[in-house]
Image (tube, rainbow, N blue to C red; front, side, top):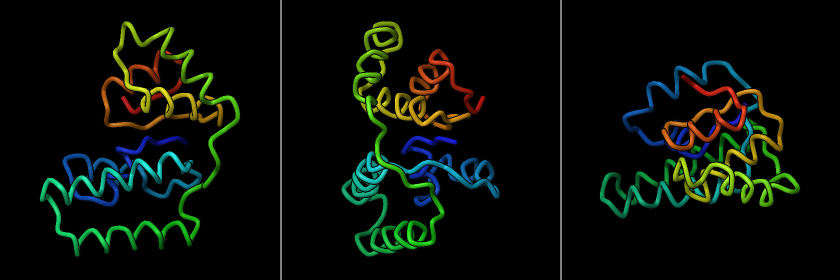
Length: 140
């Protein structure tokens, strides 16, 4: 199972997708978590403070929650797979002109493909379309 960063953000920061994310996660295990997730997630959560959606003190609790889950092996942590950047570029060449996806979107889809994920979860419409045309099963 591969979930993009927006999915992880919705698990830790209450937003419009949090209920759906919690329901989907259920008792599932073995959801990949890469250094890309960690870096992008940390930036996304910091943006919540910047935009004054959460306080600086609340964000510290959110950071600790993720770290506790990582320490408990709640996520299947793995390095970015070899060849992922080449596949990311290939996805951009093949599908970027039609779908308008960003580099990070393509990098997540490429990671899921390289990790041989069976499903791809995202709340991002363009990224979901890319995952689907790349052959991944998506949330819809």
